[in-house]
Length: 399
Image (cartoon, rainbow, N blue to C red; front, side, top):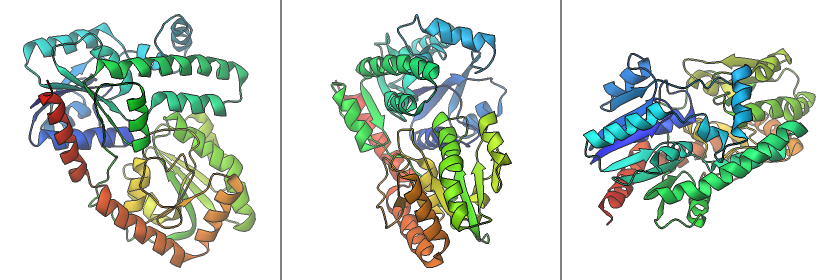
């Protein structure tokens, strides 16, 4: 097949869950299809070159101003109040991207167009000449609902409520513009189906490179905890602050000298300031997270907001780490509480679970071994790519 993927960016460097997923599944498709990738970026950028080196044809469009600070940012937020579309759609829409997409479709006979993030489905709305797929990394309206629930500032809460309603309306409509959709968890696949779509929604979970993420030989520090993820993604930032404020002090009462590493790109000032807390280290962007995961006794996932399935948990499972997570953090995964993960939502019980694991290396080893077995059997990218290929072919062949 000839496949065109549209996305917000070229998936490089591979330092976020979305980038890792988008790249690995696109690379899997490129093994047996002609795949092109249209995204905001530059044709002299490392991302453009990286995609090309992996057998995918890149097409770049000059990105819009998406800075989240300054007077222009707040003016865009204000202007969005008068738009029927949510800010996550209007802030990514440009006529340059739309015209480039239309030109590519007119010049090449593509079999299918894949929208790699739900807000970009706005570009698919009026396209009738080719089959269209939406890749739902998350149910965006669920994320916004959780933003609203957890926000304490009344003014921010009011604006978030407006955005949440717009996102809900957009999602109910946009999946109807497509000929197929994929989800990363069965719960989210069911939610898309409930929007009334006329096609089957395919479950394509997140995966992990089990040859790259292997149990490390690094010496484990019995008093070290780690949380990894892109810190410019609001759910991760919220989780880091929540853990440092509500859970870490409880652990410190029982285990003095505990160390907590927050590892991930682009931390906000609020997260950077957590580094002032005794025992907390905020690394920012790192070249390789594996040494941080390998050296920690326990991997924590204190998410309160989010959707999809947790690629970062899969990496930790592959490295045989004992994990303590919230229910939200473990959503969409075939994990079993008490077997290959510990799930606790109450801050006190979350802290107690961490304390127990820190004091019991045999229990950590048992949970870690079970987690490694899980990813070996269910979460290899190769298997997921084969399922993805089959679904795309079925959509392309459908009359």
